[in-house]
Length: 321
Ligand SMILES: O=C(O)CCC(=O)C(=O)O
Ligand SMILES: [Fe+2]
Image (cartoon, rainbow, N blue to C red; front, side, top):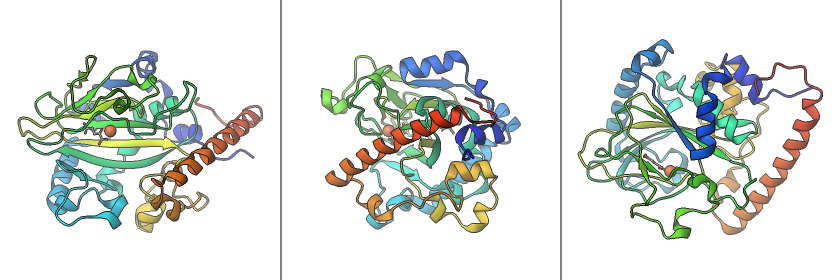
């Protein structure tokens, strides 16, 4: 019998694959990112109140201050310091207020993630980032280990939901269109804080979605005018890769019970979902562990594709992809 999968979760959530147009998918393929403008009224119709979210975020920032954003690296917390100097972060938002419950199933984020990652997916984290006044400039980077070959899988997709207008002055995100195809990270080409000849500043109104391939060269820029620039980042990963936040362990039973089966699947909090190996996760940046894990993920990938080929000939389920 076929196991529950991402296509089924998408269908159970009544998400239509066509919520992303052919052109938007093509833009993701060609440029490595895509910007979708959605008004606050449209969000309200979808049951997402950006003003409420904005207020809750501000309250959480007041409460957590420099303690914000350490949730997945609690053992490394330094008193009085932000995990990223120059930026306010908040993590594990799902456990902190009901207004975040609908955010990780935003159709465009899920469809784009499934489209690029191609395998089954799960939510890795839902965070907030806000550059602090006069700060927040990041070096050019990719959010994953660079791929080695063109056909290597895309492991992760990021979706920023803008809670404020993004402008050049308040520390927007900068990207290099097409750089997701380079099989290199910016530092390999000597890019750190300097301008890139093909860089683009993302300028977009509150409510927009910026969706990008994890291999895209990008960076947060300096908040020059001190105005708020907050975004929620919805990060989906290939389901075989570990999640940044272990939702199965960190969400309370009460909180877990509020989710549908499809949502539980995407959060990987069902009883049958394997537990994250905490020992390996803590040591994930060790050279040998990294090598071993990458070989293991490669093996799981091949296994997944064999299973997919087998089941696609036998399945009776409604397929969205
Ligand atoms: O906030 C931004 O504009 C980008 C942040 C980012 O790329 C990161 O923290 O990895
Ligand atoms: Fe990044």
